[in-house]
Image 1: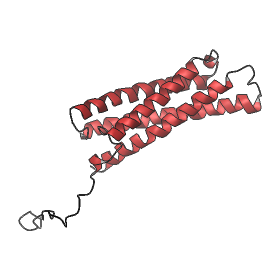
Image 2: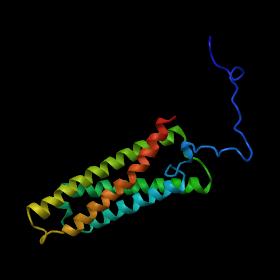
Image 3: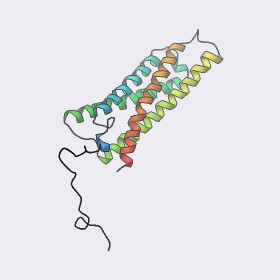
Image 4: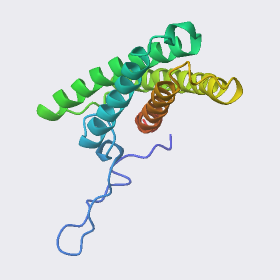
Length: 177
């Protein structure tokens, strides 16, 4: 068998001293990953924008009359709960200085981020379509809450935009294993 062993090809130690280069950043050291301050910031932004979209849409009296708006409330509610729970996990991991780079944990984070971000994006697109229909085509904004609908839709898009890096970082981490 032609297998490579450490005795045949020994690994060299990196040079130390003044002329040595700093070690390259590994995937688990990148900002935005779980259990980093960047990851915590992304999770908190996801939670805040999703909760804002949920609250703005839920405070209008006529959102239950449109299915897309009900879907937006459900999707942003799910997004805000998911992001809040993962923000708590990030806070815990930062406080006890633990890494959340376990393969199963990263897979759960990746699947959850993928599902919630897809739901939020689809709900925001559907709500944007209905909002454009009400505002431009039917011209009935005077009897509807168009500003609230537009604000909630924009907050949902921002929540999706902030959730996307979390999903991509986790997917990259999972694929690089």
